[in-house]
Image (tube, rainbow, N blue to C red):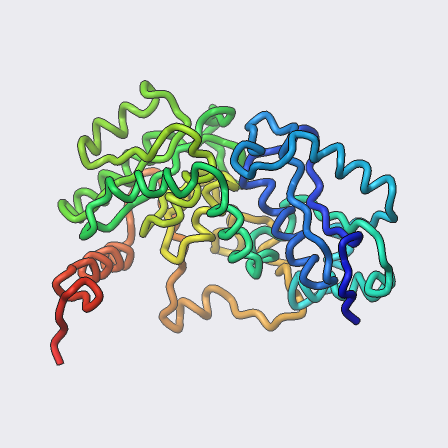
Length: 355
């Protein structure tokens, strides 16, 4: 049953405290969008108004949106779709789980209510169907298209673009060197330098390195010393959203251990490099999440990574250790990318092909 007038039926992405970083908030917003599709709800944006990062400037939303959301939650019957609700249903998708939740609580027939979504649980796998919604929402923000244009003007069309996300700010390096399973931790700059050196050595020409970072110039000096004038910096003003999209547009992402990098890699169709000491060992495999072994969608037939590798498949995410050494297969991938950039072989760019 679909209700045509759903102006008083809301999917609300809940914000904790004053709000978190963009990557974190996108998770609950994407869940709310899928929930809205499942139950035909009006999808609200996160309450950006109190966030210290001032995301309201980008999304052009009201400074009082959090107050409005609180009024709705108090005025209308409010339901909460939790991780426990999701897991108890063992669904084939997040969408199916919300549909089942709606049937159980009679939400398809209710005229007015708020359904809350929050948290990063389920990871990007749970919200993969919302990719286009997230991309549209980010592209529509203030400053973004202008910044993206300035960024693209700096690129060499024939080069393969390597995006580097070097997160600092409130992230600190670990003194104990134990990075396994640890988030909100700064990856050592030496690792980035080693990865970039490895790439430059294997591909002495045809690469552009695009650096996205909140680190100081003093902290970034080792990167600039290694890359010199082939290091591109995107616009630094009003770039919170455009940085994520510009990073996602690069052919390869060298990630930080952050939700920002994860979203950039997710929005990209290319491959990404991950700091392997961060991975959790699970039966001779590496995973970002401890829950990986359990499977988030237990009703779906699964195939192990070892079986996939035996069939010749390769991972989109490439684990790289302290020394920055990259597999020969990844180097071959970059070489193939470089060949596709030759404009004389691109029909759309007035090139020709052999018939």
